[in-house]
Length: 338
Image 1 (cartoon, rainbow, N blue to C red):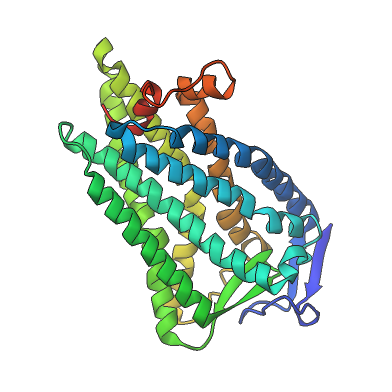
Image 2: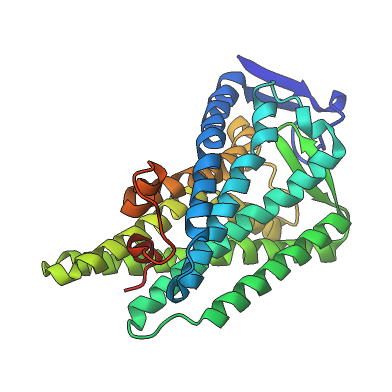
């Protein structure tokens, strides 16, 4: 069954210039996406909190930085899984605003959900860079101070962007995409700054992760061709990092492509690309899939990868082994250190 809504009668929808007044969505598609989001919420939240506890208990100084990165990734993934709740409720209610009906929920959710994916992308990029540096310079360790400074500086940048968006934008529940967005006023300076910020938050880190993924993939092929047993650990390390970044790329490429299309079209024409987003799929589902569903799936797949690749973690979850703070061989392997 198709769902339609007249934008002029829905006070929660901000009419984007160029869109049709009639919004088309499909109830069966919404329910299917809602089922998948329910799985992400039910499985991803507890698994990521378990990952948070596991990596957070590590006190070994030698692996402090990389375990802290995994701790932050697990915390961000858990928050991402929890934050899909308002979207889930909207989808199962034929896109009624539900929790988004409350202005404060719309504001807090929109600001938070712009922060979380960007921070997650940065953390994965930092992890991928640290692994690539180990490939290029195998006998040099990653600088702890450099990683800490990078994380603090980027967090400050994200908070600055969030604060400026809060000041210069208004937030609306948009029926055609199923969640709240920030809509800028007529300030061209803020519009240009936001475009720059989006490229810094999504575009550049995604490209860096892709380059690091290619390097890790090449490393796996080289080690796989070497049958010496001494190479087994290095092969396992490289394969794990390659899988981690590969999952990230698969789940975040739709958001990267959608964002790139939007920014390029706006840069060329100076306005919203209504022709590109005029079809029911592009208008009602491209952003819902790219910004909500696939990042949520990524947040669920990460702890599943930890369980599959870290024997110690899997045993700890099943209650077969008490994990100590000093003996974390498998955690070290996943960290990418050799």
